[in-house]
Amino acid sequence: MSVYSLNDIYGSAAASQVRRYSRALESFRSIFGTQEGEEIRFFSAPGRSEIGGNHTDHNNGKVLAAGVSLDIIAAAVPTNDNVILVKSEGYEADNISLSELEARESEYNTSAALMRGVAAGLVKNGFKVGGFKAYTTSDVLKGSGLSSSAAFEVLIGSILNGLYNGGEISPVKIAQIAQYAENEYFGKPSGLMDQMASSVGGFITIDFKDTSSPVINEIPFDLANSGYSLCIVDTKGSHADLTPEYAAIPAEMKSVAEHFGKSVLREITKEQVTAHIPEIRKSCGDRAVLRALHYFDENERVSQMEQALIQNDIGGFFDLVKKSGASSFRYLQNIFASSSPQEQGLSIALYLAESILGNEGAYRVHGGGFAGTIQAFVPDAKLDRFTAAMNGAFGDGSCYVLSVRPIGGAEVEFTDK
Image (cartoon, rainbow, N blue to C red; front, side, top):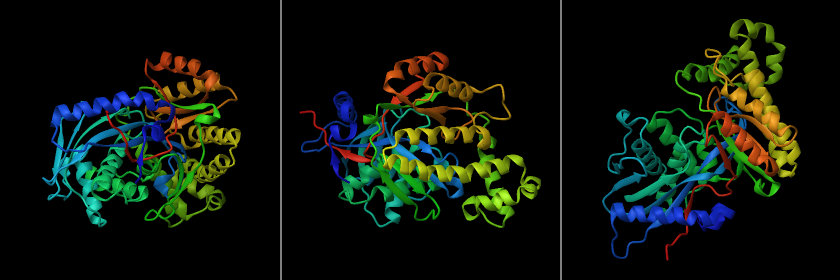
């Protein structure tokens, strides 16, 4: 893990980050004091956005994701007390002892669980851990669909990598350890996409055919220089009571695979499904057939998106993004919950995006769907109009204007001198 400058990480926004890092330093000193000869080091981990591969990872599919410009930063100092102590802005401090790294069910869904899980994952993989104290502040807003939990996991892994492992742990390994922490310690059976996009940064494709060794490709594409911004629109829909809707998607996809004696769709082919539609409809239902067909087409689209970006074919890429969104709407059917048809914020946002963008840019559902966020690639000339329309429909601050961050979890060079 190299040490990066603010310019490396934030580009044209670097100047605005100086004050943010200075405030983090001031807060660290206010909370922890200062010791003579103490070197305060800085670390950062970005949020992430899913670009393609909507609901494919849980059936060993392919995804296209990217690290984004919103991040969590930390001011940190190593300690010799074998304790990790983290004070996050707006929250009570969390601490764990490195002599007690067993998973605790009582810690499920807490930051302490993620801290303990990352440390345990590092030890399990033969890496060094040690105590530290840190102050963190985040602009990866919870509920924005940008995966603040993955960013926090990657941040803890990056701190331990920098302080105790000489920065030698690869971003891929940190992501895998972060996923282990979320699955085994936090109690959430997530895939690897969120952690990998945060840890690696930039545009990446991930092929989960072999989940123990996913294939990750980094794509050297600069969205900022293409004249477009990545926007995430929060429609303020409630995720309450939607767990059955989310759970039904992987379950129905897997039921189609099980019809052929397999466990996930990656183990069968689209041709097998289309050749046996009548009997699959009877055994699994029509929605399961449609969701399976979405899966196969979405996997192909991820590969096509990758090639479009490599070839700098921005128009072709946007066309594929819109096709992904259309498939999610028609076949995956995760734009609104069938149990709550009166709540269709995502549909309204997609309509507005189409009306404003026309044949420019692209738009699609973002993340799990049903409520929450859409994603749009907006040309600079229409950005003000797009932002105003979305904030007008869903409330001030609903539209986040982002960029794709080229660097993932990292140590940051910063001094207040």
